[in-house]
Amino acid sequence: MIKTALLPAVATAMMLAGCMPAPQPAPTPVPAAPVPTTPPPVAGVSGLEEREPDLCGAKEYTQYLSQPGSVISTIGLTKEYRVVEHRGIEPQDYDPNRIVFRLDAAGNINNIDCG
Image (cartoon, rainbow, N blue to C red; front, side):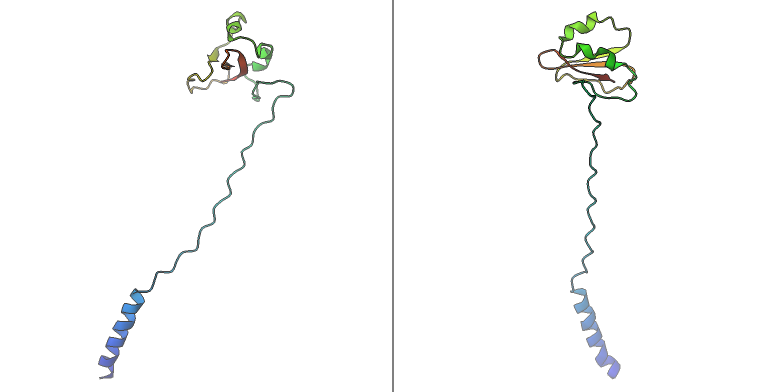
């Protein structure tokens, strides 16, 4: 008879245990965001992105910075080049040997790099 009296008590204890909230997992730490690194600018040259190595030879054309984009056709380039208008659409194909002339809103060359 002791066993049958114990059965309701055990059943009640099990039902109450099911009503208890589940234990909460410990919060996972958030990893720190990586600090972006930017290459140092080329000393004394504004508008030229530093690429090492400068495979396309963009440094050779820095004298054309701030000049109208129309001078590009008169330079006599023998290498492949691309002219990117201000806010123009640029294809995403990358060629490290191609010179890229980027124009500002006024149509002047404001950046020369490889791509």
